[in-house]
Length: 403
Image (cartoon, one colour):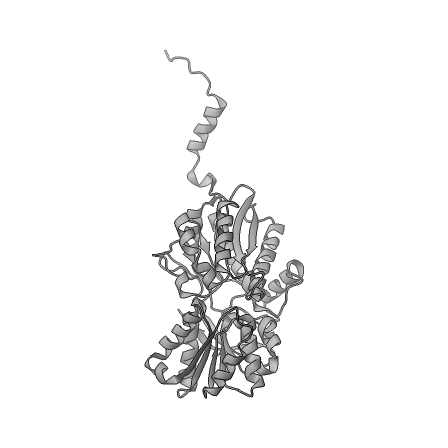
């Protein structure tokens, strides 16, 4: 005769049911995620010498406003906490600690700048907080052995400089080169890429190297120095307003070398117009995004979607500023990773998904360029095209460079 079994208490019944459910049906969260929200943090230079790049943060905020208006990601709203660091590394450390320890963000995303990201990566790696898609192309962002929680985004500066050198050696093998670079890790990456690309020829082809600090008022004296060196090729790797100053000063001096301009300063709205479009004509740069000033994209569906987003969610944004595209694309990259994480919104899951991007095509990337990562490669974008400014807009040419 079987003994009497009392009915299971409701709490015990629920516990047993939870155990019996498949693992994928259970929600898992790290701090910063919940049933209703996903909290992400970043710092941007809303003030200081690099403030023109704060457009990226504003565009990202506007893109997440669109995502949230459409129901969020798997039903969760994205809360991007974007703090000003003034492009000051000590301030970046302070604000990042606040985001992690007080605001309890799930990840740090798109923090701007090379020196600013360099000072927080050890801290974030030790905390096992995903350090996703920093703004800037430093080669050190792709080092999964030393920093498994950090993922770069755009093609690195070293690869960009080598793309210019390949073109230059073919077109002007006897060039006399002058380079203007920022006196920090960004500039040193550019200088290293130039020297490595030229190889032994660097010793006789580079006739002048001049640097500037972000605290300088202008780079006029540096440009005068470069002209006096006899250089007929100018590598203008300055950033933002300094790049604009260099373009204008070269034009005012009547110095018309073949000029290469780093892609982080290729914005028509933020750099070339302030510099003077006439003085910018003929400059060569690189790009991996569709430039909104290029008329060939007018009937492109991806461009039309970007334009519609600008009109509705970022109406005060400059439609000629490539960094409005940059913020749009970087935000879409994060959305892709978050979507793939589903209901497992943990730091481990984000890292796993960020390492698993294969052939991801985003509508405002140039044709043939896709996002690709792996456990051994934390740099999603590796290809770029050369482009030339015709006085009104950028025109890409040639084959894609990079792997």
